[in-house]
Image (cartoon, rainbow, N blue to C red; front, side):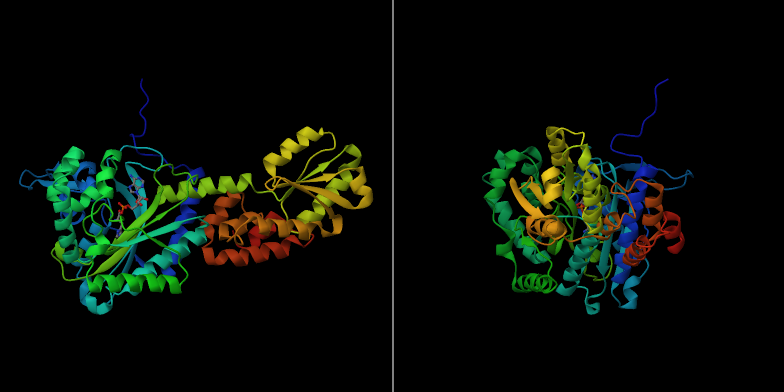
Length: 502
Ligand code: HAM
């Protein structure tokens, strides 16, 4: 009999996966709590019209990617209704905001959600038909300060904090302003005009969009359309004074908080509800996402509540692709693992093994990550092993043992230096710092891995316990306890477990 498999574009998450997922979610919850966010859970399906009205009929999401069906209800008398599995959650959150009269408090609402979304996209690495988002929305009546640029910067700064705490390396924030609804109208008119003589050069969808919703032409991924798109007018030239000032204020607040960004004038995002600030965070190539390098996206939606029949309630929010975040963390951990060792000690002859082991002990106690070869290895084998595992090889032969001066080969620099044994720890540490442009920012995960509390692929039972149990703020005290205990003679994993109540 044929085996039934998970549907294309969907995945099972097994215990070996969920450890990291739970850690990511726990860290997000802990960060969101520090910024005053509370959790909201909305249904997985909604009336189709909700997405048509908010995300927009002409977007790829609504026009091609939704799982929609006609729901007839149980009783004959039930009216049929078109329902859709949610492709995103901002519309659902704003619907709930309106439905529960949340505007009446007059306060700013800060809401976050974690859950699955559904889009019928072509599956590939980092792109699934059921995927998870970790998102947040800040909205409220204008007098709650919901349209202030400070909120935009706060949300972006919170994201930077979350990604840093999770240990995501090399993220980049791209920022733009798509202006007010009026700015967009003027821009759409200009685009329509500019597209009229050239639209026949583009794909069929874009020929239609050039008339119905020209802004969506800019989302096109068709390489043939890019030439036309490159020559179109830019939104920045259509921003009114207020939108321009708002954008300047967002940028100034980000600079005050030290959050790096680049302005990308083409970033209009593929959903219709955006106004003013739009943004995306990406990760560098080689971070496990292939072409799907957008880790998260978001922006301001000052008119969305009114589009859904609610009161005026400007807002801003984002959604992180959790699947992509996990892929990134795994790929970057692997990379870190590959480059992890500070040194490989190569004893030249079996007689040097004890001395080499003693040297490794000194270096490890000095805080360095070290592997020792074996005096039985031929020099070529030592070189190969060292090159694979470590950034440097320390040669420990008879001469070195008697003179106390060691030969250190740095693979990246292609240099060989002589270093007195007593200075080796300091020299290797210094070289490690010189090797990077800036002191590496160590995440809590890095610290836990370095302290030996969890393994680098988060795969053991102890890892699950630690990651599930601890919020990120507790991690530092755990490392302190661990390091103190480690120096005691009767240190054991069990004692560590007792100490942190695992
Ligand atoms: P979005 O850009 O459509 O925005 O999606 C946000 C993130 O979800 C993307 O950056 C990506 O990481 C992830 N994502 C999207 N589609 C897929 C997929 N098929 N497979 C895996 N991951 C995916 C929104 O959804 C807006 N609601 C964000 C927002 C909130 N704007 C304001 N508030």
